Amino acid sequence: MDYDITVIVAFFFTVVVLPLWLILHYWYKSRASKALSKADEETLAELWQLSEKLERRVESLETILDREAPDWRNKS
Image 1: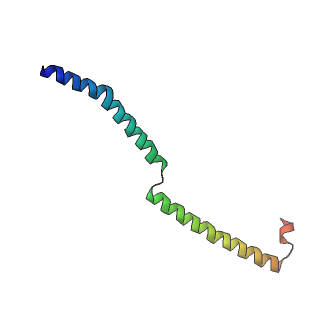
Image 2: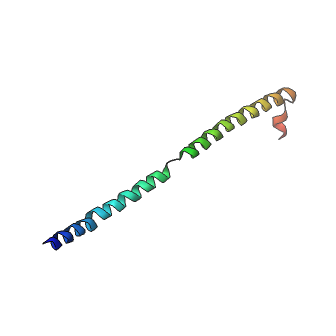
Image 3: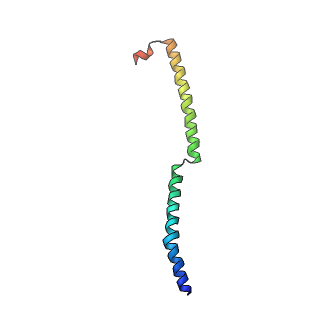
């Protein structure tokens, strides 16, 4: 009798629990890999700030060039 219960439990685990566990495990892993890590978010924020700073510098240089050499855009 104990042998029958063990076989039933092992069969249930193998057929129901194990596949469900594997599916959920790999589903969670794929979702976690799509999200940005904290370090990636910080790097992205730093790059965004740097790009804004560089954009302001370019705008300043263009303003200076417009004042000093008004037709500089036509030469390039």
